[in-house]
Image (tube, rainbow, N blue to C red):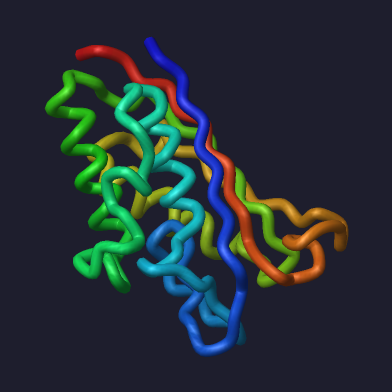
Length: 157
């Protein structure tokens, strides 16, 4: 068994969609990034890759590669799952936390969990997604950005 941790952050800006866990969340701002900037999935992919000692998403999907401009992070998660599968690993569980002052994410979490479980071909009970504010502190608290942490446990098949 191996443990991995992932972290990602993106700036909030006007004129972009807010996508978290593959869910398009109606809001006045979205996350700025080369791909769809889904911080939750980026943290999760980094945790999975890290657990298997396979680098990080920047190595596999570089932001200077036009193939990934506007990329759907659910598709990138699918590719990471396939990579771990080829290396002989499977996900035991994932525990993810989104740090955002606004918008309120609770109503969207069940769909995020479903999207992730479906893409990783695992049971929804193995996928935890939580959201928290930072009480108005820091860049997430002042609404400048959104961050996410993910911890995963993988094992050899």
